[in-house]
Image (tube, rainbow, N blue to C red; front, side, top):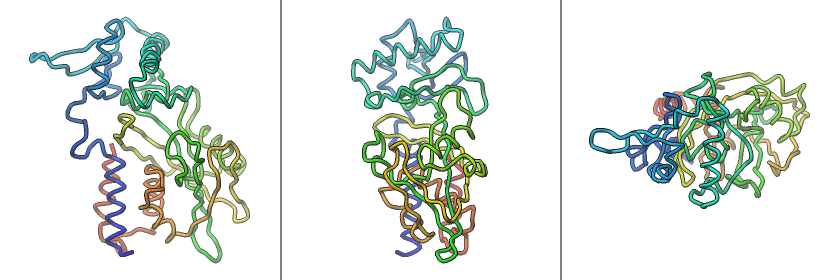
Amino acid sequence: MSNLEWSEGVLRLLRKLNSFDEPGSSKPTCVPFIVNGQNVGILQQELVKELANYPGTFTLQCNQANQINSVELNEKFTTYDERSEAVLKVVQDLKKKNAFLTLRYWRNEDYDVASGPGQPALLKVERAATSLFGVRAYGAHVNGYVKHPERGFCIWLGRRSPKKETYPGMWDNVAAGGLGVGFGIRETMIKECYEEASIPENIAENMISVGCASYTIENDRGIGKELQYCFDLELPLDFTPKPLDGEMQTFTLFNIDEIKNLIIQDNFKPNCAAITLDFLIRHGFVTPDNEPKYAEIVQRMCMWS
């Protein structure tokens, strides 16, 4: 594979991951979702039409041309619990109607909804509904790596279970997880390291925070607006990750050349591939000297929104 072929593969990945900002997306017709005067999400027209059936819960605001320009949660719901309960009732009703694909993947896991990172949570929603309302979901990922005496720098990847609701059988980071209500970032990552890869806490606690990956992907489940907190974890040479909770089916150690090839394949979960790409850039394996489209790749990653 030539450098240029790899470059184009990486750019395709990044365009796919941030497809909401690409030509042909639903972005021009979407409207903001407002809670307590704050913009917390973005709604596609299909959902706006459905929410019009719940006037006691949602208010459709129109401009002078009588075009809907925002949807607001009724201001009579003034507390976190009241807002959460009101939205849950509507989402449960939409689920019964089988109105939206994403609600078929109900997780029984709640995510907090806020106007931005570090802001107070205004309500919580079922995880499957985050892409329905275009609210930002938060998670954490860890790149598990070793410095192998013969193979050089290597990275552990997990193969997702074929029974996973999303991206079954695809390559994934060694551990990752969403930030459910009541769980901290580092707490979540240590928990996921053990549950997914059998990495004990005394090893996982050595992970280093290295930044965030933010993107907005549009697909048949809606608008996936996500922010992932990223960590690096150097694993002992004599340690082999093992599946524990069934999320993964196996783990494999790859060298850098193998990792670069996997990143542009269709069997690597897109956000995990990009988080692995970020690792390669930060550790100097992808540089302006060996990558002809380095500036464009880095610029696209910096523009994740």
